[in-house]
Picture 1 (tube, one colour):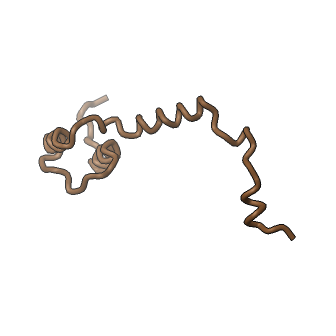
Picture 2 (cartoon, helix red, strand yellow):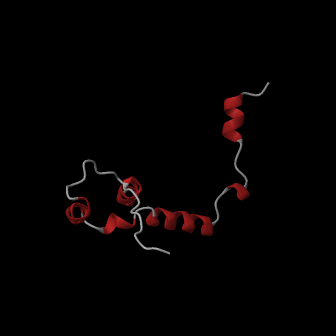
Picture 3 (cartoon, helix red, strand yellow):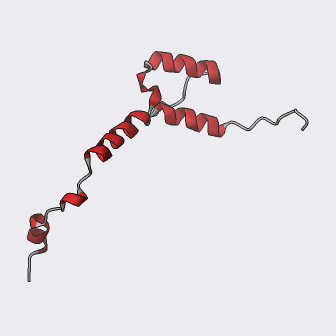
Length: 84
């Protein structure tokens, strides 16, 4: 009976299992897009947050875009006063 540890160590992925150069570039691009606000300094981000919310953020998440997404989702939708 083969040793499962040895057989797992000796099995190599096929070339089709490896990501292509295009897939790696797209993954890197997704990482960059994941937080478009990362270029803004912390003090500037907190200042702009205060402009929107009226107080500094209670918690700083690693992903600032995620903070904005959570903020927007937590706000009630304003009803339109326009008559159609």
